Image (cartoon, rainbow over all chains, first blue to last red; front, side, top):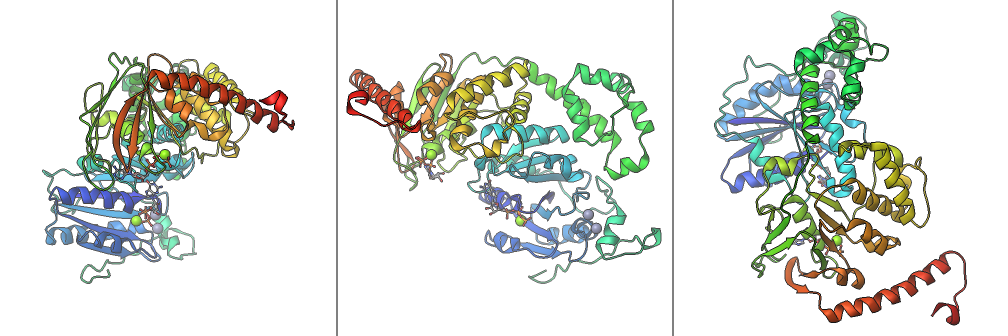
Length: 233
Length: 338
Ligand SMILES: Nc1nc2c(ncn2[C@@H]2O[C@H](COP(=O)(O)OP(=O)(O)OP(=O)(O)O)[C@@H](O)[C@H]2O)c(=O)[nH]1
Ligand SMILES: Nc1ncnc2c1ncn2[C@@H]1O[C@H](COP(=O)(O)OP(=O)(O)OP(=O)(O)O)[C@@H](O)[C@H]1O
Ligand SMILES: [Mg+2]
Ligand SMILES: [Mg+2]
Ligand SMILES: [Zn+2]
Ligand SMILES: [Zn+2]
């Protein structure tokens, strides 16, 4: 089983482009499963289920969703293996621009849209800077000139990444994306011992949790476990 | 540039040698101000640990990335020589899924092709297929070859896909930039040599095309429909060296479309334009007729139609004059205006 992590700001088009990309996989006979991580609410599982694929979701509630992601990813991988999928995709909404869920040696895709403003690429931080592939959506709404300027801004914060435009509405570019993200020779059996690409600041997490006291002693991550048994996560 | 050189030349010298690296420092939130005479090595010695933590700076990643960026940018400066220049379209399907019936359409350098058809018929879609160099992967399932071949993935993804310049029907601006900042950034992304000169030229041309002038300090989001269109036409015409130009409905913005087209069309290019305007339609050497998402026919413009075009143009002149007189508060009279 291959694993890819897809992340990006809320409403940037992650689900839309994944739906189109997964359709491409399904027509080629590749079995895909999706786990969606979010904070308070998501309907994405309902969309993915329409494709007839195994789906789970996990809500982090009061935790930073990226912290929640790392605490659960190993279990999620085991779930994917149980489901016998060829490709497991995680979708997570990057809510705090400081964290990112990317893992070394696991393909990382960041999805951003053309509408989010010229300075957004520089604000997003590790989620964009350390991605392998950056997908830019909603190019249909702006002019070619603006697309080019935006692309340049992305390229300047992450020159190593493959940057591509995918339209979440009509799927233009989704086929290319599907050829880029899936490596059938890759076999992820466990993430035990693997490392995050970028450390997540611990301070953020305990204060997200409502911690008000200042000092090292109080800065600890709270770990909550995802429920993979039932339908509604 | 190798890593050693990079780490040891002063930051000021680096900016002189590769001006775009300054933006790179800024975009990576590296606090270099006041340390321009330091090398990168020295700079990272003096920056506070806390700042590094705070701004999520990863020194090793930054250094690798800047090397990569310099390589990437340098590769863009290598001239883009397009020897041959040809677009080939293979049939796909209509909206209802039935197959298009033409064998193949080939368009060569110097040709102007207009695209006509009812609203919603798929004109913009055809232009998008060409821009994307469709390879059975768009709603129409068409295949488009550029210079006789399927584009490599990296050419399709390329940030500065220089083969095709598109003037799209959607002209929304969303970026929070002034006209000048925007043109400057776009010129940077297109790697032009004399940036300031380019920006001035585009700005002057755009003002010439737009009925009502605008200043360099106008935010692009505040431009009117016609002004945005004028700006994009001047930008596409002057900035882009792309051999293929796609134009989607140039007529709709109250700008002088003849002037605009003259600016955009040069001999060496392939021009495809979608239009509802008979004058523009007849200006093409051929016209592609679209219906229900599919290409129905390709018609050569006849000599008779060319004569009609001359007639239409003089009618159009009359219309333009009247439009301008009305715009500037004059009254029309039979004697003077017809
Ligand atoms: N015009 C346009 N709209 C798009 C495109 N891609 C996505 N959208 C729309 O953008 C909205 C958000 O898309 P989603 O795919 O739900 O975004 P998301 O990133 O999955 O959002 P969350 O999971 O809630 O963080 C939807 O209304 C999509 O239809 C695109 O390429 N063009
Ligand atoms: N062959 C096709 N198969 C499926 N969908 C198609 C096909 N051709 C066009 N479409 C879709 O039909 C819709 C309308 O097409 P398009 O916008 O290209 O029309 P148009 O001719 O440019 O209209 P207008 O004159 O109003 O600009 C688009 O969503 C487009 O993707
Ligand atoms: Mg989603
Ligand atoms: Mg159209
Ligand atoms: Zn976080
Ligand atoms: Zn947190």
